Image 1: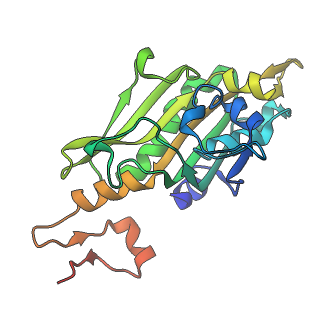
Image 2: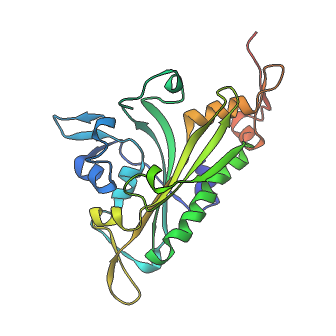
Image 3: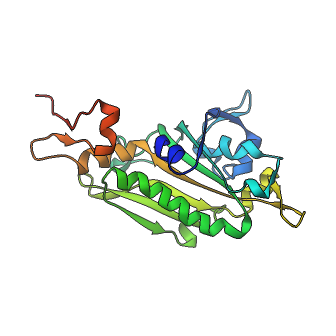
Length: 246
């Protein structure tokens, strides 16, 4: 994922912290609404990140960027921590909903005039990962009632899991317009010399646990072996199949 994003799509990889303060969580919109779904250390007032979106987007907090540098495209591969408060039942057991998981996140800082066009590009960048892995997926544009309150437009990417007989969300790509930028005081100097708020976007490229479920199930053969997608074989010493343990 990082190779695709950084070598083909123009992203710069970051290695952000996995612990952030309340100001950072508030800046990206996780606080106060989602506090019960987050892990908090009250002694130091630090939070485990629910997504790399938080530290990466806060990188330009209180900064003034140059219009010529936009769009800025950053990516990071981090563990993510979520309490999943209120989640229970057989549909959330196993790898489908866990308290710690790994995810590659993409964050864009863009000119306000291009933010919705850039969202379409961001969705295609996430799609490229799934297409390269030879996976059956669908893209849904969310209605207002299904979107988070901070997003202006959002798409979900879902993989089909045959064993579960359901679609699994592995990426959510959102345009926040200037919602996060106003909280973060992240601005840019436009060509007219005026200082304006940037627009921010983010999307997963992609989350690993559900990806692994769909990857194993969609590529499983009748004999129990799993065909390794061609794009992954260089990372596995050229191995073409995973064989079942007898």
